[in-house]
Amino acid sequence: MGTSAGKPPVLLTRKLPASVMARLEAACEVEQCPGDGSAAHAELVSRVAGKQALVSMVTDTVNRAVIEAGDALRIIANVAVGYNNVDVAAARERGIIVTNTPDVLTDATADLTLALILAVTRRLGEGERWLRRGDWPGWAFDQLLGMQLRGKQLGIVGFGRIGLAVAARAAVFGMTIAHTSRSDAGMPLDRLLATSDVVSLHVPLTPETRHLIGQPELARMKRTAYLINTTRGPVVDEAALAWALKNRLIAGAGLDVYEREPEVHADLFPLENVVLAPHLGSATTETRTAMADLAVRNVIAVLGGDPPLTPVT
Ligand code: NAP
Ligand code: GLV
Image (cartoon, rainbow, N blue to C red; front, side, top):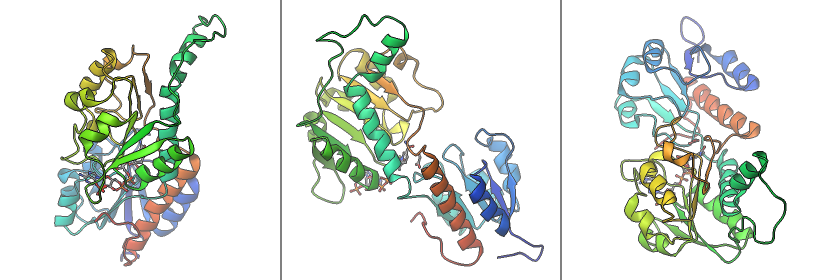
């Protein structure tokens, strides 16, 4: 594990939970990018030189420039299951291992997806805003009526770990499940969009899935249907979605992710039929600790000459 000069140098873009930091610091010489925000690109390029490992976050752009500046890099441990922020091909060319954090965040992300489904179909955001403004006149029989989930179809686009976990939760609420898949007899996307009452996106962001949902796809959905996106913002054409919500082409949306985070399309803010969460999918103390722990275990394994636990293949 150690270099001739001592512990192997590691660059961390954000502070990790104390227990995980302690384990990393016991095994490695850790340098952390200053500040709490995502590492500025120039900062990343200059600090990565000479480091054997980079522990990156979903908000860090680990592109070819960073990878080429990482002249001693052996592993990039992304603290996320999605790795669209890392140029995996560039890393592979240089023999650098890339790891992610699958499984440990599946439950938290599926829970948040259900929270968004419930929030938008039961008009929670709208109701809360009404109440906080002091405008609520009191209970009424036909007030803020939403959509019941029992008996409705949930269309899952991307039936992997999180998609499956969302399906299991939705089944408990009495929903029937349809899903798309490239590898089994799933429903074609067009039919899923046309028949589902709630459509939930769980595909990774790749060149093929960028703007998978745009104006034509939104137009295919039922006017009474809801779109949920907890995967990556660019999977949806955000301008087209804002237009569709404003013009009631669909009933509503629940979003955790955005095309240009932390920017959110300005047309979404005035709309009552969209619930906006600030990328909270894996944001529980337990899950973030488990993600950091897995990333650090990958670093320690690889720098110690062992295979990575969760390599991106
Ligand atoms: P996963 O197990 O790999 O599932 C993704 C599924 O998408 C795959 O099973 C695959 O199924 C399908 N897919 C469709 N088109 C694809 C394509 N072009 N390339 C690869 N797969 C494709 O991943 P997961 O653990 O469920 O995570 C899914 C995504 O959730 C992550 O990539 C990440 O972007 C997002 N996420 C967001 C948050 C958040 O904070 N909001 C938290 C965690 C994860 P088929 O092969 O059958 O098509
Ligand atoms: C979070 O967005 C992740 O991909 O883990």
